[in-house]
Amino acid sequence: MAAQEMLRTEALIIGAGPGGYVAGIRLGQLKKKAIVVEKDKPGGICLNVGCIPSKALINAAKYYDKIKNHGAEIGLLADNVRVDMVQMQSWKGDVVSKLTGGVKTLLKANGCDYRTGTAKLVSRNTVEVTDAAGVVTTIQADNIIIATGSRPIEIPGFKFDGNRIVDSTGALDFRAVPERFIVVGGGYIGIEIGTLYAKLGSKVTVVEALPTILAGNDPEIIQLVARKLKKLGVEIMTGAKAKSWTETGGKAAVTLEVAGRDVTLEADKVLVAVGRRPNSEGLGLEQVGVKIEKGFVPVDKHLRTNVPGIFAIGDVAGQPMLAHKASKEAEIAAEIIAGHRAEFDVRCIPAVIFSDPEVATAGISAEEATTRGRKVKVGKFPFVALGRAIANADTDGFVKVIIDAETKEVLGIHVVGNGASDIIAEAALAIEMGALADDLALTIHAHPTLPEAIMEAAKASLGEAIHIQNR
Ligand code: NAI
Image 1 (cartoon, rainbow, N blue to C red):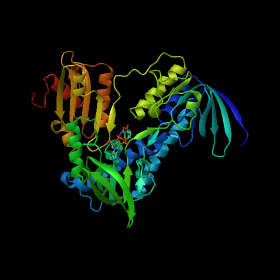
Image 2: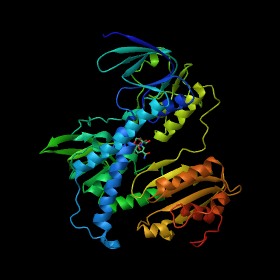
Image 3: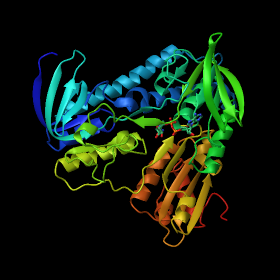
Image 4: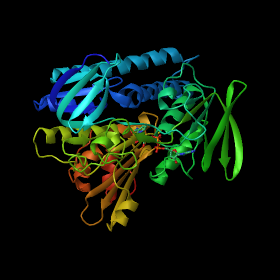
């Protein structure tokens, strides 16, 4: 072992994803001495191999599909439009580098130290960091934030080999568009990446064990997404489980169990996206007494674990596994370490699926509200009645606003339609501020824009929609 270095800090953050790096920046702003330790690259899964690169490719595929398949309709004739996957990947790489480079710059600008190495707790306030050369640095920290994220779940018989059987990281790095592409798991990742390659020309089959894709979402929304997938030529097999695969003639022959029968499909690539598991092992957490439940590190609303001075944020600290939840938790943990009064007290965590059309939700569904004993009213406004959506030639979608029938409080907003990912910001703000349907309905929304659908759906919940007939 090489020579040891000893450091002292007020806060040590393990992991530099959207949880860890945000905690480092905020601690720096609050004038706390902090060090972020990352074993891989700054930015974590989200910036390097998740949210950002997937959106880059999804966007590129959207342009391609629009021009190739819908250009003529709007008078755009582009012959011989092709996909150069190698160039697309190179452009995606540039997008990622810009953002990951920015993370290091921001940490530095805020006075937070950044180190590359693998961290392991050796006591409640001591962490050993081993770098690639095997040099160990011992860091004494008054506070430790665990922000180690999650990794894809493997299913029996489908070991990721980086070639035929890939996780989302592998699927976002293909050098060529696979001719036949099987996606195991019709959740967030499966649907986003499946749609992307269907648009680029793959014949895609989605294999989902449950009776529906995107389980847990509004059935009407799921129906719309499923319909569009079918239009793109995607085959959706629900109630189907991937059992095994073999390499046959340069392809993967995948055996599925569908309604008690075995079915075999061939594919060039198989993406397995059946959920993610928290990274809580190998960190020395159990040895220092940190409780772990089903792989997650339980925390209170201050992001404290059961061990004083040790915090956990992001995917490792529990569902939902969303980058923006991690970043919010990071700010709160940093503020608590700096002695501020703060707690994770939010009314809603918006969620977006970058499918086609996009799906975005904030707050609760009508069913959930009814279960909680609220009497609800639902206002709905379709994109087909929205000037901007018609001008965009993208009218599949609607906004649903769920309000308390008596108080008119906005309880939930559910959007399906391209642009939903941006529209949802207003919905989250409204719910967070305890807005009433009237607040949304009375606010002047610029015309012609997609968020007008929120205003109209809110008006519809009050029986006052302008551009559709009120029921
Ligand atoms: P998921 O939980 O969304 O979906 C996994 C799906 O796989 C489920 O529908 C499940 O029923 C199915 N499944 C499980 N075992 C199966 C089997 N043996 N055969 C067939 N189907 C099977 O998980 P996913 O898509 O891997 O994403 C993981 C997490 O990453 C999500 O929970 C989400 O929080 C996050 N994420 C968020 C995104 C966003 O915010 N836009 C995008 C991508 C991921």
